[in-house]
Image: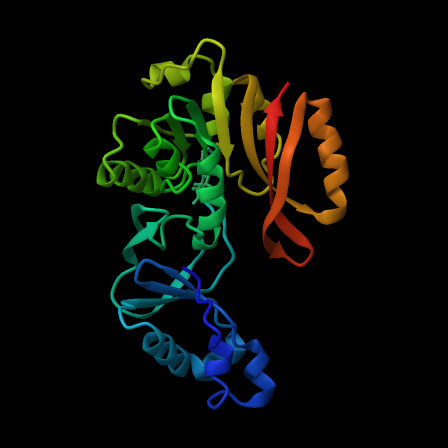
Length: 282
Ligand SMILES: C[S@@+](CC[C@H](N)C(=O)[O-])C[C@H]1O[C@@H](n2cnc3c(N)ncnc32)[C@H](O)[C@@H]1O
């Protein structure tokens, strides 16, 4: 969970970092399991050790501190990290009642989305068939599976896929989830490939899709929509500026998708946010 106490890291470093550099100290950082993940600007190089010891003193069971030194890169959406304290980047993370094992350096995981993932899971009904491309280590997969749905999860990164399979086992959801490793675009374009991997697609299509789309893959919505039954639901994530939203809603309408609800789920760059659209296929 994110560090959201009243005293921010910047407040805590007031006596240590000299005033002109203080605004560069991040106010917050994330915990993934017992690992603290921060992004320390290069200008604060002289204060790295002090920052690490402050972080270690803030929560007793912190086992490692990682410094994110690049943006998310490539189709796997993985950043580069330096290990500033501790031995390894492997951890067990608890979220919304489920346990996730992962190596933070090898897979994508954003702990700040825990509330959004609980919101989407709350919409899911027992007995539904759910398609989840871009599944990662499973934070969008396990809660719907735990509600008694049949989930088909697709993920391209072999490391994330291995974690996903292990997390399904750890949470005893093997009967609920079929994992397919590969390119979701290729897999969904080849009818029959889901069945070939052991997932029985309902005759009229999936009841629901949850699509945590990576940046630049908006065209994927059309592909997913073809596989959803009439009246079925799609939770679609996309990166946009606020002025782009009205035109996007129109575009979805033209695609035969009614917007039931939408909201911002985080800021990713100046002016650009991640948005979720809850869509119903007409
Ligand atoms: C934004 S992350 C979301 C991961 C996960 N749903 C989560 O919220 O933690 C996107 C994921 O999609 C995977 N991915 C990217 N391109 C893909 C593709 N063409 N087919 C399948 N998975 C893909 C990446 O490896 C990454 O794990």
